[in-house]
Structure formats: structure tokens, C-alpha cells
Length: 188
Image (cartoon, rainbow, N blue to C red; front, side):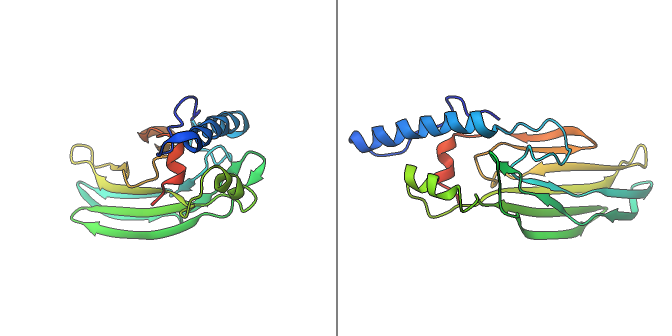
């Protein structure tokens, strides 16, 4: 999504704060011009900074999930302008059976290219560099139809910037709006 005026501000006071926030506003304009990401489909098209995909097929007998097949997690780091971001880091990927449902969870983290990181450090020093998204998918069988269904949830523990979207069969099913750009300096 475009940053526009949603860049926030650094804390503090005095001329240093004003200079840093003016540079942050300029950086927001550069980000918008160079690579505003706003994926509207689940295609792996380099238009998402953090991309992860798991394909699941399932078979039901009434409300019983009798079989399923889940692909290996597919990830892509996207680009920062013309620069390819480093490979994503997958953490906490697991599958868990809960009653008649199966839950798939994972976290994907991405860091900027070592070519890009000095820009962040010039604007304002930061220690943490990784943005993340945390995904949960619940697979279950619908009682009235006996057909498999998935529900997807994005965790509010995901990075505040950028935005996050989850797709099921090509449709947006869950979305977390992008927070202020300044949150890239305050990552967990």
C-alpha cells in the first residue's frame, strides 16, 4: 500500500527531531515512487515484500477430516525497488490436530538488503531489521455440506508495517492495514 502521509514521526524534540521527521517524509515519498506494494491477487509476482503460500487439499466424511495434503511452504522476499531482498526466514512452522480440525501455523521474516539497510541507519539508528507476518490456517469440514473449508487468520503480532493480506482460492480473506512507516524503526 502507498505510504502517503502515513509515515508517523520519531520521538524527541528540537531541531534533530524536525530534521529526522523531514527525512522520514522524504523517505516515504521515495518508497511510494520506487516500490509501493499493493498485491490484489495471490500470484507470486514480486509485488509483496513478504510472500508465503501453502496449498491444502482435503477430503471429508461428514464433519470428519479423513485426509488432507498440504504443500511445503513456498516463500518469496519480493523487491525493494530494483533490489532483490534476501531470502525469507521461516520460523515456528507446524501443524496441529485440534478436535476435528487441523491447524497450520507459520511465521515468515524478512530483512532489507545489506545495500538498503544503511539508508535506514542514516535516517535513524535501529537494532531490529526484520519485518514479519504470522499466519494461522484452520482446516475443517462443514457439518451441513461435508465439504472441507479453511479459515485464515493473520496475527496482530505481525509487523505493523507493511500491510498484510491473506488469500484463499484467489480471494482476499483477511487483511491488516499498514501502519505508519516509522514503525520500521521499532520492530520486535
